[in-house]
Length: 498
Image (cartoon, rainbow, N blue to C red; front, side, top):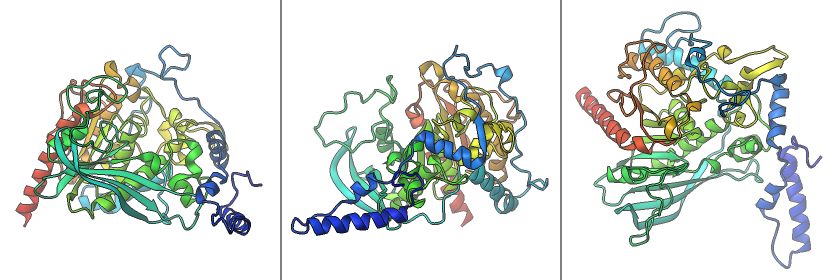
């Protein structure tokens, strides 16, 4: 019974009281008791395979389809033939209500269509954030004014956001974030919150200490002509905050009974519409923004969110669901991010429903990779929404969709074309809300992706494919210039409205 994965957290608390009382009686003269960490280690934890199977059982799924392999030449290799890439060419209408009425006003979008899309994404794709998520208390662990980024003086703070775990003391969640702002800034500065801390995101060094030997090396290898993103931001008068996703929620299925998801569920497995890791990371980013709103060096109206790869997915989800974020840089996000779910090119829905990636999504998402179940079989064409609608949920706030090239490591697996199609298809919502989209007049199915290093950066919706690899550092200077321009237009518009 003690090893049962459904063992309730209430019994864990009872067992903890018994053990602590026994230890206190035995070692009262020594004056120590069993710590929470030891109790946490005794919480029942499932393996990824056990958790994945449990979700399939909840949904009545007998067999999932195998996802394609990213290795070309494999017996089940992914499709890279453009002529076979669109088996479901018709996307869900972004500006048509479920009752068939067309959305023609901003009011109808905000009051009717947007809530419909949010409901579908929460129920079927990314999951719902529970209403009972506990609060977070932030504290500064380390603060320094004698640090530099590159050669520029900065104010650096190492922060911890402790989540109230009184409902289940055996599970602790301590959100790790570092905030760095220019030391001599004349006023509050815009800040880019970055998932993962890649690109030079550690605690800044002291003047005179040696710079990292791989300063111009890249995430995943390779060299850059540009300095790390953190240096580019500070040099441009921005600040940055690096947020560690694993301190919020583990990046695997075995961790779903721990982290913030496990804490809210008191150590028990998810229900089919519970949130996955992407939504949990986005929740953590929002809690980080709570802190940034209290810091006088930060312009809280101009805080952006950034990430690459799976954290690019998280950045897009964050902007879509958290309206306080002002802008996003979405790097190489692929399936589950900007790539169309319906596209059969590279990574597929079946990869996201497999045991290696399902934890990113709501349990209900597994239905769309199902070959045999109590409800039959479903595929990507059965999804009620697609990623163009996720991008549309960001409107009218600015979103910059970024990719590299396969030759440098940003693999075809990510489907750059499918992400460009989704960005084009999100355009009508931006236009409806008075913002500028990519400026593409063609339909998403026929629009041509611009050449590499040719950005579409005139609107609130932006696209640029750089000539680097699986990173967005090569687009950072373009993002900063674009975001500064957008913020300036917003200020001018606000001034003219007064």
